[in-house]
Figure 1 (cartoon, rainbow, N blue to C red):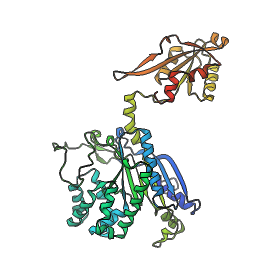
Figure 2: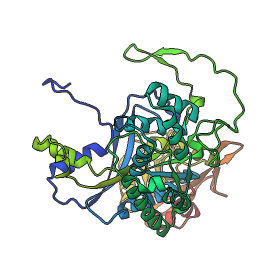
Figure 3: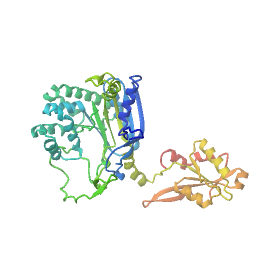
Figure 4: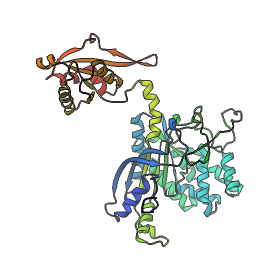
Length: 460
C-alpha cells in the first residue's frame, strides 16, 4: 500500500504487464516481437543454491498480433532451443502440449466444466508426484469421480513426438471433440514448422503438461534439464507417469521436517536443499485472451464476450535466469572460468602516476580493450598486483617515470590454470620480469598474443 492508501503488488511476471501495455495502446502496432529482462517476485520457500528465490530475474520473449497459425509459436520454441544450446545448459527437453487438447480430454472423460481448471492443476503435478497421489488429490480433495480420473490417467500417461499425434487423431472420441480436434490440427502444424527449424530432437509431446496459469489458450511448453532435478533423479522417458511401479527402490521413511519461522512469524517447513531441484528453466505458451481482458476492463465493459473485441493474440516464453545461473555456475567453477572479463590491469611503480594510469586505461577502453586500475593515488605495486590477480586479469601493464619518458611500458602475461581442482597462476615463459613494449604498439601487440586469441575464442 502506498502513501495514498492505494494497494500495490510486486510484479509476478512480465506477461501480464505486457498485456496491459498492449491494451493501453488501443490495438495500434499490434504486430510486434518484443523482449525484456527484469525482476519478478514469488511467495515461495527460497532455495538459493537451486535458483529458487522470492525475487529473481526473468527474460521474456513475446510475439503479438495476428499471424498465420503456429508460425510465431514455432519461432518462439526454436529461439528457446537456440538460447539454451548456446548457453550450454546441458541436455534439455522442451515439453509441449495444447490447452485445447487438454480441455478436449477432460470433456471426453466427463470432467464437470466447473472442475476443469482445478483438475488441470492436479495433472500438472505428474512430473513431481506419482499417479496414485495425483488421483487421490483429484478424487478425495477435489471431488472427481474415480472412474473419470482413471479415464484421464489413460490419456495423460502418453508422451512422444509426431507419432503420438497420429495415435490421438485415431481416437474416435477425442477427434470428435471440436476443442481437441482444433488442438491436434494446430499441434500437427507446429511439428511441421519445428522440423523446419531442426529442433524436433529437443521436443517431447507430453500430455501430462498442463501449466497452472489460466490465461493460456493454446500451445503450452516448458524446458527442463536433467541437472535441474533433485540429486539422485535420472530422467527416464520410458516410465509411465501413471504407473504405480518405479525403477527407484523404496526409501526409508523421511525424517520429520523441522518447523522454522518466516519473517512474518508464521511457521513453515524447513526446506532440505539436497532434495530440491531447480525445476523448469523456461516456460510459456499462447495467451490470446489476456490483452482483450484488460481492454474490456479499461473500457468498463464487463459483458460476457466483450474481451474478444480488443483481443490481440500473443505467444511468449519466460526464461529463469537465476535458475540457469544455478546450473551453469558449478560448471564454470569446475572449468576455471573467470567471473570478470577485464583483460588489462594498468599499474605504476614509484610515485603512483595516477593521471598517466587514467590516460592509458582510457586509451585501452576506447580501443575496445577492457581495462582497469586501482583507484588510489599512490598504491604500492604489490597491492596493485594483488588487485589484478584477484580478478585473474591476464595482462599487467606497468608504468614507470623512465618508461614514460622513453615511450614504452612493461607487460607481464599471466594465466590461471586448474591444477588438482585449484586455480594456479602461471606466468608466460621468460616473463617473470615482463616484456618491454612500445607504448604506440601496445594495443596491436595485445591483440596479437595467444592469450588474447584464447579470450576471443571464449577459452578464458
